Length: 318
Image (cartoon, rainbow, N blue to C red; front, side, top):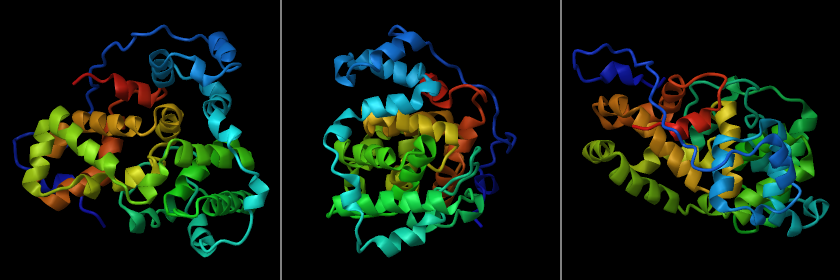
């Protein structure tokens, strides 16, 4: 069992309990908010017809949850245009047994999934006790989606982490072929496939942003010899799909348009919110365990339940 970070805190005279005080939020209204009627009108056209700043702002802070499926379809227009025939990709693949082995651990709980273990490949497979038991029909759909992608992308094939992304999409859309198209948009059109080819450029960027935006944490990481990949690889490989469902889906909402920049920004905001807790960690294992296992939940516990976690997180001014 992983040791809680509280067990090794530096004695500062403060209570070991984490602060539950609400962080200050800044006003982020720099663009006009779309009404629901405006969203419906926009969805009739192309996403390329919209100004980037205006659309990005509304996706981040004014997302129409009841139109999520329509928005996802709208944002993945290019993937639909370039989509190959799904049924033609349903043939035997060398990755099939690997896919089958990962199926049962792919679907998360319907509600909030708290205190997930944010480790890499090995720990991602140890979450079966927290994952939703699903019917065989849904497992078969997920299997076909992952087989289709492994046959489409001969270089990447299938890598663990794709199953969590695909299962979140499938749970939301329920339509098998459409879920494949969204997955293909994320991995190919948005080029997130590079992560599964072990291109860790995103972690290098996160490291630079930590250095300039959260320098105290950067120097603490240097002191304890903690590397970004030690802390954030599971978030990256799963596209944050093992955190609370509400936040996980909101990250997909933004990623479909902004690509991986939203992942970088979310990580930086989480670190800013929990800087005091992180700086109390005394050794390498302590910091890694805290960031992998408690960082997100501790931060979300400070936000208002029932409101958009992502919008709140992005509006925090620290």
